Length: 296
Image (cartoon, rainbow, N blue to C red; front, side, top):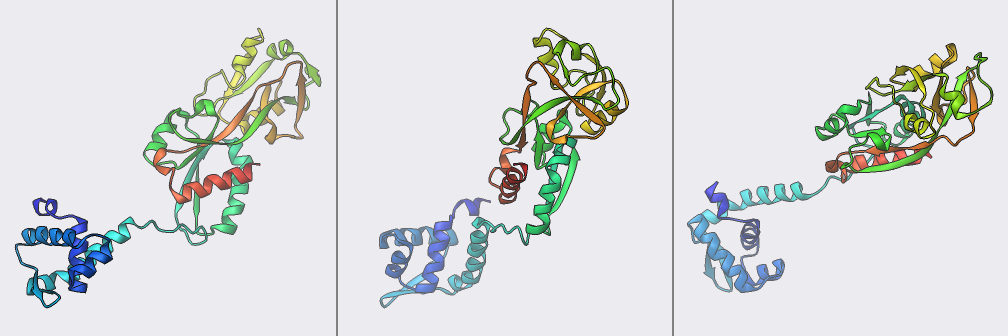
């Protein structure tokens, strides 16, 4: 380790050029430095390797026997460093990487099929893994690389993580087609008194997305069932007297009837979230751009 501390890349590059050119002036021109700077580097190299390295000969310098043995090693080292600093050019058509996305069934229904269509055309070797959204594990999953991207509501996203808005959504109040207790137009107070289903991904609580809205209207709602997916909510609403709020992109549904309320129902944004280390990853950037395109 001490030996490594005595040498830097500039010195190794100078040594490589001297072995090739055999002339301090030409090396100085090649490296864009003064001839004195090359002489100074050579002095340090001699001390590091404990060898003269080069002997003056005519208008140039001749490498010692020991210096000649360093040539092939220098080429390998400096080529390897060059490759290390070069970023591989990302090509969707040839990549064989895997990307993992976590989302609710809303995004799995409305975004992922169209994303996969594009991937099959433009990146046929790319594999896509989709995981159920775990709200309480979101930050850790992104941190440890278990998940590359999360599609979610901004209120669930870790505030310090970068994000991108994909689209804006609105809720529609719905009831089962056979539910005779509802009308096509109702008041917030009337809906609040009806039994409701709440969608709560991974937590199983009874607040849901419009809970605060009902309270602000002065009409706390009657949440009787909490389910983790909109698919389950729709199925339950269609077969019971429960009502609920479903994103508009999951409608219309032949088994459900929409109910217009006398107040505007709050909407929400769907965003993509990632960890900071993936901000410059070409694949992650490309997928984020595709998500924006297919979400329009």
